Amino acid sequence: MNPLASLLEPGQLVRCPTQPDWGLGQVQSNVGGKVTVNFEHAGKQVIDISTVDLTPVFDEG
Image 1 (tube, rainbow, N blue to C red):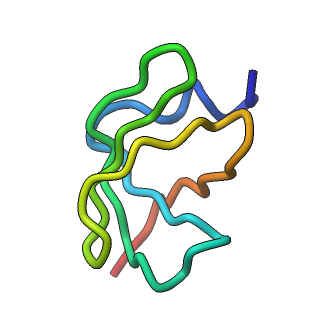
Image 2: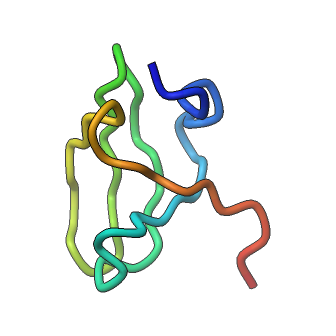
């Protein structure tokens, strides 16, 4: 499993490097490596973090 999976808890802000036009996202849930994220420009997306990277954002603003 992706080593960052434990950081991706509900409320965590993330970006998807392969989809920069999605904008900033907020993790809604993380179950078994399937992360549901609500992105500002793409809406709710379910992402398998074993195949798609998400970058945690710790200081936005």
